[in-house]
Amino acid sequence: MLKRLFFMALLVLALGVITACGTADDDDAANGADGADETTDEDTADEDTEAAEDEEITKLTMGFVPSQDAANIADTVEPLAERLAEILGVEIEAQVMTDYVGLVEGMRTQQIDIGFLPPFGFVQAEERANVEVILKAIRHGDDSYRAQFTVAPDSEIDSIEDLIANEGYIWAYGDPTSTSGFLFPGNTFLQGGVEDLDAHFVQLTVGGHDNSLIAVLEGQADFATTFEDAREVILDDYPNAMDMKVIGFTDPIPNDTISLRSGMSEEWKNKIRDAFLSFNDDEEMLQVMDDVYNWTGIAEAQSSDYDIVRSTYAEFEDMLN
Image 1: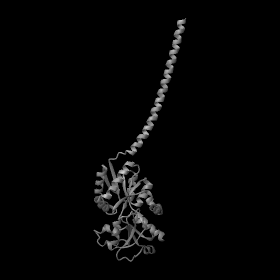
Image 2: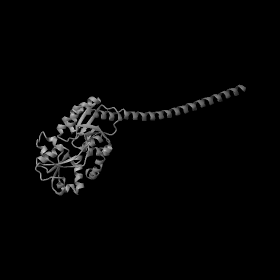
Image 3: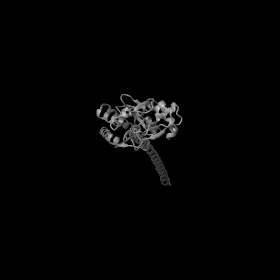
Image 4: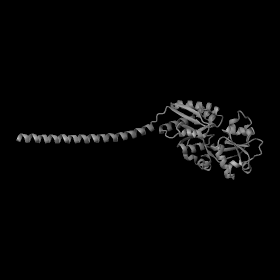
């Protein structure tokens, strides 16, 4: 009887130990699983952050909009692409877009990494595609420029006031989203008393600043609005271009930008910024930049530099969207 009681006591004790061990193992397994899940989540977040910062880039695409003949600018930008490829160690592709809208869309869809955007194009791209401006043009020591009103050498038009006072003149400009071609001149007209640009002028959209001046020289338009001084662009083909009359200018406009698509890592932003800034000490590349867009230098830029463009854009937002 005593032996039976002794064995039963041992059996109960053994079962208790086994149960306790099983429970502890289950708890440890559960805790281990929870801990593993927690670690995995943190690790994933860290990996995502590191992936954004250490962006793997093997190719960058630059987008341009022609201020001159598209075929010419495509050839002109090739040395720029080649030099950037040497500095950055990645393939650089240059794409010449048909207009500013196409370039903005290309940056929105991440097809264009680096955009040579005019002031209005940048403001629009920042709003629509969250692009970031990093640099701006210097032209002959200035980081701003003006839109220029130009007429034929023998024109009866002598001032901007003449354009405002008389309806029906044919107005040639490159693109309705061009800052110096349309927006700032258009705002000058509105501020001067023109109530309806469409009713006051016959508008001729010709796809470039060079074509705007050529339209005037060839008698297709009464006046052109371009960047200052776009006459130099067409001198080779039109030696009399400098005989055209400049009848006025708009308020200063901040110069064109080099802007980057959204989502680019700080590392690559800095690499690209430094690469372009190095051109300031490279006469050959400054000549290339001059040939492409009449840039004689490059300076750092920030979004607030373009506040005046935003206020002008507000006047035309309904028409352009």
